[in-house]
Every structure is written in structure tokens, then in C-alpha cells.
Image (cartoon, rainbow, N blue to C red; front, side):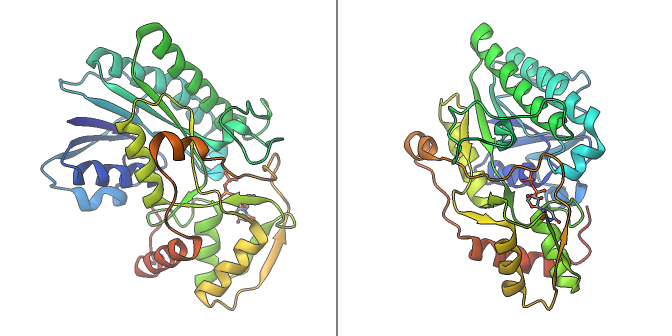
Length: 313
Ligand code: UDP
């Protein structure tokens, strides 16, 4: 089959391309390289079944058939990136999603939307099941991302209802692993970069806020199973092992053997206080759950960052 992957030069997108190619499919990767990096797909250069098209999905696009699936992952995803590019983030979630839904409709293709746990905002329900409607500040600094993804979900459901498009929505929780940009501002590459340089680890607030970190191979397995299913979602994909940011910083110090100290900085506005996916639906419908422990995943990621000291995207 031939799949279109938007955001192919991004962190999760590039790993998903690897998986589709390994399953024997053809992949057309699309990326405008705003926050993605060619380095993430450099190993695929010359691959007979892969091509990277540098293109903004908000612009019109005609493709020759066949297109069997459109996997829409394009978007700035790190708070630092979407705070820097709020309008581009709103555009790709709205206009870009509309264009990719149209592409799927014209070709009778399957459509998969990568959505986010940010749809739940700063959640008042814990852990977060898919049935929870969320607690999003519609005008705060994070709203460009949260509301773009909520709109993208609504648009995807409208195409399903109006045109019978075969759609799926994945709500992706914090994911980490090789190919994250060292400078993308997210907590995993930031702490690893600081620990490996011996610089202070910058914990925001008092570090009592929690996240649940999923290793990228588990995430890709979940997305792959979702693609093979007929499940419309939304379906949470993430690792339910919850940890506070302060404990996470301490784990990083232990695993890297770093002499760095911890420095406390102000908490960013609207930073969600707790986040943990309820994954019962993914277990039941996809037979999926994460397999890689935080320690194992961090060891892999640390080894990768040590091998790629200049990885800056
Ligand atoms: N964080 C932190 N120090 C950093 C970067 C992030 O304490 O240098 C915190 C951030 O405030 C949040 C958590 O780590 O509570 C996860 O942040 P990230 O940007 O990775 O993703 P988010 O889950 O907020 O989208």
C-alpha cells in the first residue's frame, strides 16, 4: 500500500515512516521542515519505497493515485515550538487538516489524525479517559495548539459523518526517544542535554506536576495497530506510568551519573498539573499497551544522545 505521512521529518513521524517501510509499504513523507529536520529521515535517502516532499500541507496538493492512507502528524508539538509559531500551529491544525482530509476523500483513503492529550487541557478528571471533554483555556498561550487539535478532531469527525471517510483519532500523550531535538524545549531532551553537559536541570515550578512518558517504539506500535483497525477513536495512546517532574529529574541524574544540580524556575502559564492516560480502550480495542519501562527507554535515549552529541535538528 502507499501511505502519505505528514510531519514525516518530525520525531514520531519519522519513526512511523520507518515502521511502514519495514512492513513493506510505500511512503510519501511530507514536511515543511518548520520544526521537523531532514536529519530524521537522512537514513532513508535513496530508499526505493520512500520519498520526502518538502511541502506545507496548508497549500494545495494533488497526488497521483494510489493513496491508501493519509497519516496526519504535521504540527509543531513542543510548547516552545508552538509558542514561537502560534499561527502556523493553528493553520496546520485547521487548514492543513482540511487539505489532508480532502486528499483522503479524493483517493478513498484511510485517514489517521495524530491528536494530543492537550485536548484535555489542565484536566479536572484523573486519569484522563477519552470520554472526558477537557479543561482548556481557549485564550491562553497553549490554546493555539490545544484548540487547533480540538478543531482537527471535530473536522475529522465531520468528514466521517458527512462523507463516510474511514477515520481514526489518536490522542498522543508525552512521548520520548531518539530523534527528539535537543533544543526543542520539552522536558526529556532538555534534562538529558543539561545532565550530559553538567548544567543545572531546570525544573519548572516546584516539580510536583506530573507527566506519563511513553517510549517512541510503543507509540509507533499503537499507531500501527490503530491504522489496521477500524476504530474511529478518539483513543488514548500513552504510558500510564505517572511521575512528577522533580522525580523525573532525579531519575535522569541517576541514569546519566551526572553531577548536575537542580534549579527551580517559574512554572509556565497554564502548565497542566497532572497528566496520565486511561488506556483501557486501547487495551481492549487494539490489544495494545506499552512494553518499554521508563528506565529502559531512558537508557536507550541517553545512549542515542551520547552517540549524537550535536543533534540539534
Ligand atoms: N518542564 C520542566 N523543565 C523544563 C521543561 C519542561 O520542568 O526544562 C516541565 C513542564 O513545565 C511540564 C513538564 O515538564 O510540566 C513537561 O513539559 P514538556 O514541555 O515536555 O511537555 P508538556 O507535557 O507540557 O506538553
